[in-house]
Length: 267
Image (cartoon, rainbow, N blue to C red; front, top):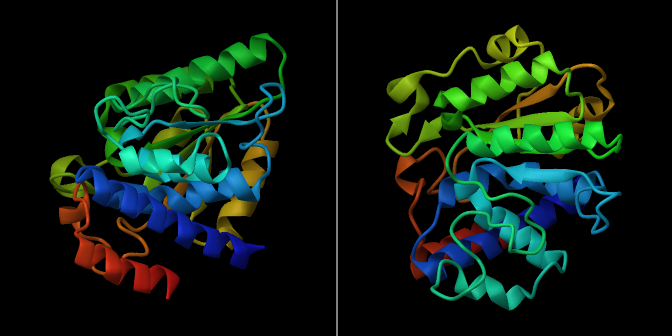
């Protein structure tokens, strides 16, 4: 199964890269670092891609700038025509630069960092009040942890013991202007979440499905407290010349770079 997921992730990475390149605008680095997390949720667990509201788990991309990765997945799963990927960020087109609930498969508008996490907890609380079994996955960037609203949400979720809320931190250690430690150190991530009453599951390689899938399963079974899956990832993962390079945070690949990326990803 993990080999199938790796192959699927490589194909979807190319879809996202082509999409960003065609637009001439978008966030390459963070889309690549989050791809395997999203693939694990949509293809490896089996509930995130359900179209019936009562059956599905919700995936909220709080780091909304990484949405090309999610768009590639939603198109692959048939939420909308794959031709839409050709029109990312174009005036009058459906696919905006950040998630919008008018897009099939997108639940909440996100992009202003931290607010998607807060809204995800609101959704989790409403599901609890309605006694529904759905779970909510909120994917955060590590630079996003610099926002105060993140820790207000962490405090609230711990207080209400929101065990249907699972935060996944895409810890690629880079943001638009440099390393997190240079700009505003967010460590210690585990101790901070635990201080608010969260269970923390560390994934030392957030691109290894053999680690990701069991971590998600453990989080789904956790009771009486929210869970944070702390994933160590690589910015630009899968694109050798872009890996761990802050320059590719928001850079679209050229045609020549796309060819190099395709050879690396698809052979």
